[in-house]
Length: 180
Image (cartoon, helix red, strand yellow):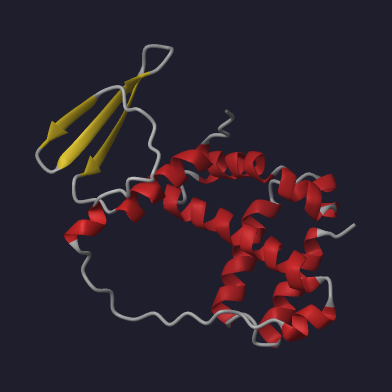
């Protein structure tokens, strides 16, 4: 049974062997520490249990840190925890896999402005039916009445790209466990 502590050791080893840049490794460890505070003793002793409870743990992390961090930041921390655990499971348990690991190098450059056609969702994207849609200058406003007669409102700029809309969907999905 693998422990959360072993993921920290894996990250340190990945930094030393230049598999992770130092900043990336530190960011992964910071995210792991944020989540580790909420772990039970059993979850600290088992990566599998940690992974299976990650959504519930994220909800606790979110509730306790929503005044300190933005929703985007907390979603980023969750994705970093997923990356650290995924890489650990893939490369950290077998030294030969670690030695042969060739991480993808990402070079960041100056961003170019988005093209107008990128703002349209592809026809294959399945979107849920929106109950009420009210247009406003430069915004689409979606207002949904919930079961306790409260309302949820989302305003999305008409210039939002499909990537930005997917980001909104991902953030909303990460806040609540969705079951079909």
